[in-house]
Amino acid sequence: MASLEEYLRPTPIIDWNHTAILKKAKEIAGDSKEPMEISRSCFEWVRDEIRHSHDYRMNPVTLKASEVLEHGTGYCYAKSHLLAALLRANSIPAGLCYQRLSRNDDGAPFCLHGLNAVYLEGIGWYRADPRGSKEGVNAQFCPPHEQLAYYIKAEGEADLPEIWADPLPVIVEALSRYNNYAELYDNMPDIPVISKKK
Image (cartoon, rainbow, N blue to C red):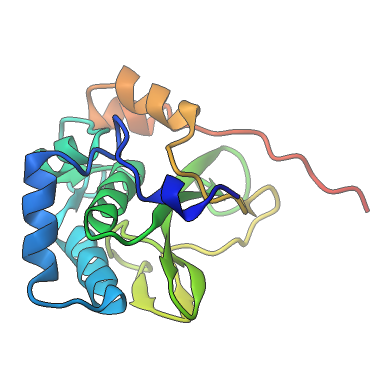
């Protein structure tokens, strides 16, 4: 795993040094100096205020954190980019995680799902999913307990263990290629998972 400094830096996609991101990060943090409280506030803001592109049938398809903030919408991947940016802007290490999920809950086709990990003193890396709630989905920020949007159920699904400082190239490629939420939904990114030999 990379050093914590890697999870604090701005990148072309996690562009927390953008003026609008810095302003929103400060606004969300308010007067708090507690990383746990700030992390919860940032998580809940992205989860509840940024609309999931497919749930709300919203365009454009966003990629950069600043684009997600500007347009108020994003797929799970883009929402995780914004949450990482808001946390890093508040000097809280944040990374990106992925799950491989069944699109119909019982097998192929599969796609990646994006979420976050935040580093909290006394706890370590804690996963949180700002995807947004809907029927059957109720992600919360309640360290040290994880309450994610989705859990692994079907064969072929997987929790990918890595915590990335930058989005996976397959995610960047998909969000860059498609301009319409429906086109992206029909072409969701996926990666093969190598099964462990018994």
